[in-house]
Length: 333
Image 1 (spheres, rainbow, N blue to C red):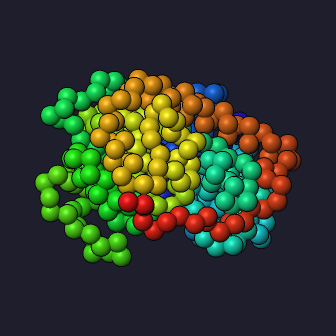
Image 2: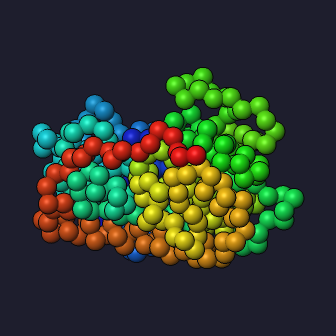
């Protein structure tokens, strides 16, 4: 099968440091190639000069740029083909949450059962990652003197709840290493932390990020929205870290009692974080190694492609956001 991934990104391929959706798309293409398919990319820019990436030309019709090569198109956003400009069969993956009531294409794929349900859909495929890029996990608990938790998200995003993470870590008397922001933000989610117990690493990627996760006692992920999936969760679990988080969105589908703890109470999360050493780091690693691999993701998407090529719709009707279920603005004390 010939698959054209379409994501109008300027991130280099392969995405060696940043890019959540880009990393998923890249891992998916590697899985597809391992299964005997051919995968190419249509992107906004190709700074690394990848030979399988073609730069989108806004002056030319999209179908003309496909040139009959692909059996199926995979848009990594909800592409609107209302005017019939694309004739090649296609699917879309929604990688975020939508608040508007504008219908999605009927062949839209979501990232988890919950993500699909809150958009009135049935079809979902879990994200996967190319685990060989992540090196070896750390299956040994950090020594007491070196213990810390890590936070991995865009710190300036209010839904990611950095403020709650800091409160929880301080209640657990555990240092917090923040990946995804600076020590201060002047945006709508204003914050400033001067304490030495909270360390900020900025927008960190590559081996630096992986080593910070390996040495961590746990991922602290107290989000205040319905997380569509959560790459930070499976990355941390793969590298041996349990997850202490809120029970919203995909989290109950990714984290079990064996691999972490979910609660909407800051005190309960702090207690679990303080006792994170009770979790089996090998069990954390094993829980995601196959379930969320690039091959598992590629096989699941292949089933979606085959259904579409056979003329079947992936959802009974065009999905429409049902209105995100209520999530508190702040966790219980």
